[in-house]
Amino acid sequence: MIELREKNVVRANIIQSDITSHLTAEEIQEIDTELSHVPYKSGAAIDALTIVQSKRGWISDESLRAIAHHLEMSAEDLEGVATFYNLIYRQPVGEKVILLCDSVSCWICGADTIKEKISAKLGIDYGETTHDNRYTLIPVPCLGACDRAPVMMVGDDLHRNIDDKIIDSVFGDLNEDNDSNESRLNSGVKNSSVKNSNSNSEEGQS
Ligand code: FES
Image (cartoon, rainbow, N blue to C red; front, side):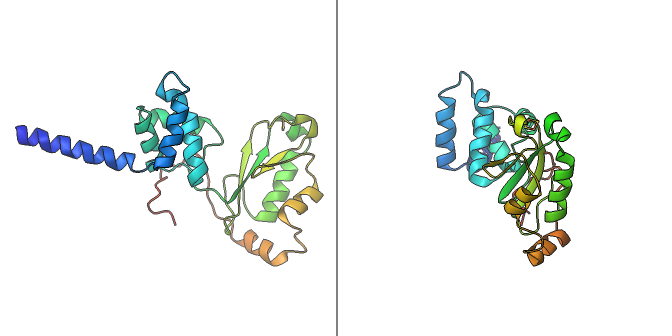
């Protein structure tokens, strides 16, 4: 009986260290800094997700479980937080994420047309990533620049009053860069529901 209990303790320790090992020392240190500013650990959930995403580009199931374990909350609760926020990615994204505002001011000023033009140029729909892994297109609510609608962010850059000229300058002129755009058009990767897939394991991603 005692032997069985000891075995279970050893197994639990192994599982715990497996989970913890999914976070790097640097990630743990940064998360712990945030923890020192909040009264309870789950209060740092968004910061912890953002920290890990900034290092890895997205939040896999393994990362999510490791963060939840570190914050002493359930993976289900943390998943609820992660899926609530548009900017936490639960699937791999491209080098740059295009956040296209689809709220009312931008919609009135032609966000739908802008979306169609970007989709045609890059060969991707919302939630998809170009085959060359450069761009992922995601709709977002108001980016806070309604007076300059339509608006999008590409990586860290905010683009206002988007028109054909801006689309060409950001993504390249289709006529000048025909070959690479053609290849993107033909090979947009179906990557729907960037945020909410159930198979978000790092294992098996290539
Ligand atoms: S509605 Fe698009 S930036 Fe506000």
